[in-house]
Image 1 (tube, one colour):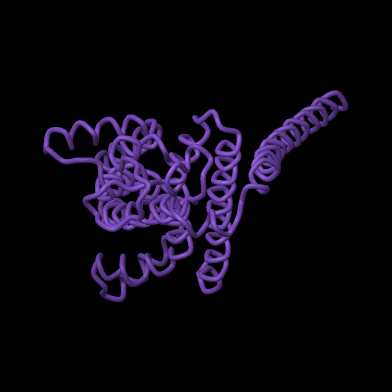
Image 2 (cartoon, rainbow, N blue to C red; image 1 turned 45 degrees about the horizontal axis):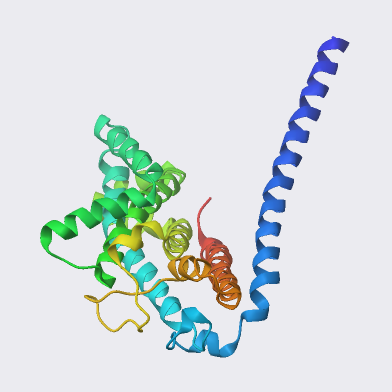
Length: 286
């Protein structure tokens, strides 16, 4: 009996050690990334860099900024997230209310898991081949569409798990009162799942704003501010890539400043998702 207790104690210590090691690795990785972009990017981060588009010879070290990339990333991520929400929300409601335990529902969830694991550059290459076949050029609309595909499995699977965690009594009570399945889905289930839905949307937005591979083929890049859905648009990840590719130290330092801006945007989205989830979760039935 004593030996068995000792083994359990050793197992508990081992698991605690692994958890602590994992926490330190994650925190250390995040801290090293933030420290690198802060130390290298903060000296080059100026107000003019945030409020001006690139000027002539910007990539040679002349004056200008990354306003085009900031606006382009926001437009791309916002449009892709809204399109992804329009596609994923009906899919999730249908899965939850009509195919929760069916073979078709399991197949759709498996397909979404596979889509989630596909690298974003594969989405970009796929969308680029379709654009070539249709005779379209790289544009803001093309970037939004491919980001919607990238974010669709993220939003759909996250929302699906949120809905499956809701108490089954809510749906049964609504149906017992005479509500239809659609009325139950929109008026009861969706209302109770608001915090998780908003969190899924904001997390997908954070993924979209930081994606570079998919928009490289579909959105292109330009030094001009975004003015049309059918014209190329810049993005912050590609701005970092192109600036780091120059041999000029001043421009490379601007690349770290751009990375700092992108990191702060993603951090703000993550903190915002937690704040919104906490605010909306006050009246959720547990």
